[in-house]
Amino acid sequence: MEFSVKSGGPEKQRSACIVVGVYEGRKLTPSARQIDQISGGALTTLLRRGDHSGSLGQSLLLHRVPNVPSERVLLVGCGKDKELGDGSYRAILGHAARALGDTGATEAAVFLTDVDLRGRDLSWKLRHAVESVEEAYYRFDQLKSRKSEKRPALRRMVLMVPKRSDLAPAETALRQGVAISAGVILTKNLGNLPGNICTPSYLAEQALALQEEYGVKTTVLEEQDMRTLGMGALLSVARGSRQPPKLITVEYHGGGDAHPPVVLVGKGITFDAGGISIKPASAMDEMKYDMCGAAAVLGTIKAVAELGLPINVVGVIPSSENLPDGNASKPGDIVTSMSGQTIEVLNTDAEGRLILCDALTFTERFNPSVVVDLATLTGACIVALGRHASGLLGNNEPLARALIGAGRYAFDRAWQLPLWDDYQRQLDSNFADMANIGGHDAGTITAACFLARYTKKFKWAHLDIAGTAWKTGKDKGATGRPVPLLTTFLIELSERRGQPDA
Ligand code: BES
Ligand code: MN
Ligand code: ZN
Image (cartoon, rainbow, N blue to C red; front, side, top):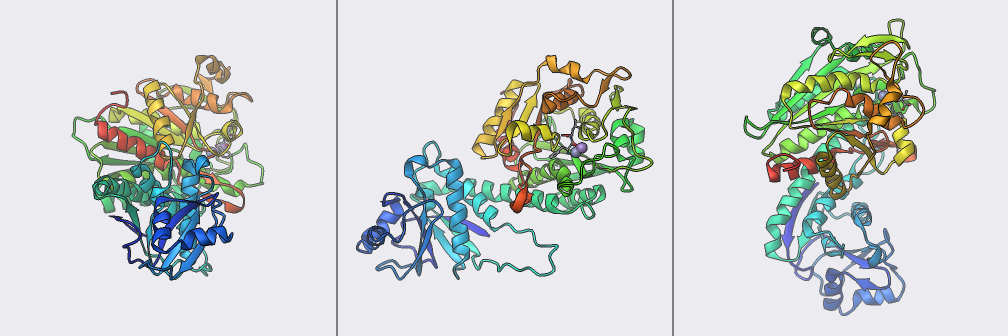
């Protein structure tokens, strides 16, 4: 979709379709009121007749509205004006996009940025309008031989703002929405690809493609390099797989050489069968999504590169499959991580922390300002938070708060769990420095406790995206989260050009 912004009222627009909102209780948005006035009460008449209730998601397409120069007017229900929140605003835009897609219009002028959303300014509404429309039109049909659904005719969307002086901030917000959407789409596409296509080597190729497109510096370390670095934990996970593991680094250099980078570390298990501690069969296909952390690192770097943010960002992706095999790690095996700490692998299905701990030690070489890892790490996180919030834990409060704030603005929310030392005891091992599992209680926290042992040298936060990275059930598919959260965090950081606590 091609987006642009323009100022002006609906009375002058010559568009294939103008889109305006109506609330429940026959209440009109400012732009709907203008149309009503010039048309001699066309909208109030049809509301009175009960042709549109204003309920959220209901839409009505009108042709030849008197004195309106546009060919069509699409009325979109906004629900009760008092109940309008961030999520319902995004839903309204999604409904509008789908309704527009059912028309023959190739272009539309959208006035929904004038709905009344307390606490959100025009920039917020523009950014989220773009993201919601892109979300509504996203399809993953590259592996279907017949692309059944008909594609919407709509090509161009003009987002209308009230005043000329609104145009400059509106352009910025639009650019951000477009960049975040591009990152989200890349992340969704990678996530939705099956394990037989999206292997560690495939992820490495995608990282190299980013190098081609944006001039980032991509490096791919092979099994032999990992052996040289002493990454015994990462290598132990890859033992059961015929696909070679990869350690991928992508360096985006937008800031000065003296600026320490933000390092993003993403779990890249391209299929998690559990290893010898094999998972039950039901829904095991969804473990193709166990590389969504890695995909979100690439998606965020894409968004940052699209925006040309004046900061340095490094993505680090440890990638492997986790499969059972005669050569696979066994429960009880003890491995030595790059940090020198030894780990008793009591459950081969707790593999994410094993690849992440070596990747986290590896990040020390970048002298990071902060490190954020993203991982579909624990089923326990879905038990704790459901599928609305990512779990957030870390060793630095200002960083945690900055991420929570960014997530709120991005409508890609995270919720903090405690990382108290009291939980560390659950990782005690009789035979090694630690076990890789912490028992039944507080599975998300003990997983983060494990990672905390590898992140003492820098400010660090961990996002457990097990519940948020993809949707299950009939809408099964990757969400692209937490690309909006991370990109927002990095935009805010670049505006302050410094530390998250500066
Ligand atoms: N990738 C899984 C976590 C997961 C499971 C995410 C289901 C989303 C849905 C991870 O590797 C895993 O298997 N974790 C185990 C840890 C346990 C063995 C301590 C889990 O959550 O069961
Ligand atoms: Mn697992
Ligand atoms: Zn996993």
